[in-house]
Length: 178
Image 1: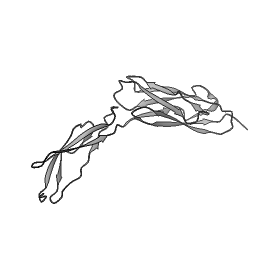
Image 2 (image 1 turned 30 degrees about the vertical axis):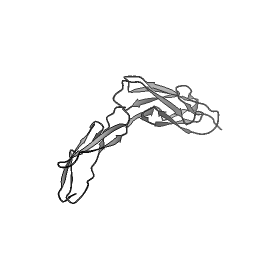
Image 3 (image 1 turned 90 degrees about the vertical axis):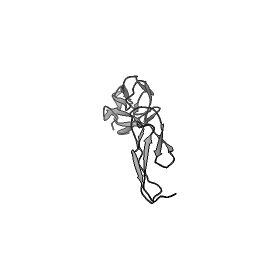
Image 4 (image 1 turned 90 degrees about the horizontal axis):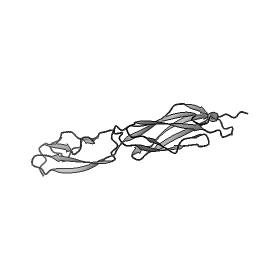
């Protein structure tokens, strides 16, 4: 194959809402190939991994295509209202807000919650962000462990299908004294 002349290749993405490519790239003279960027697009829609075809066309050459998998990146956030709570504060010692990042909020999302230390703070096993809402609040209950153990850091973690895991922390201060 003669590669003495530069070749301009037209590029097309089968789904520009998921991945974009430059309109053209030029393979320089005396080179057999050129690299180009494929940019993922955050569409803010919880739609899972999407397959996108990238096609290259140049005059005098066969059309070629290949695929790329674009991984979804929708997130949840947990924002705990209080930075610290007393272990003897009991039920609803503080609250947290769980928010989803995607713009299509037509379906409810059930989120599994876990406390890293249930002897200090507990949360409901699950909370549901209702359809057509971006967020929901839930209570964090303080637990008095009756042990002189100082301030403990507790992570509250949330997981849901299709979303990346998220967590936030709260300090639980000790109530016992010497």
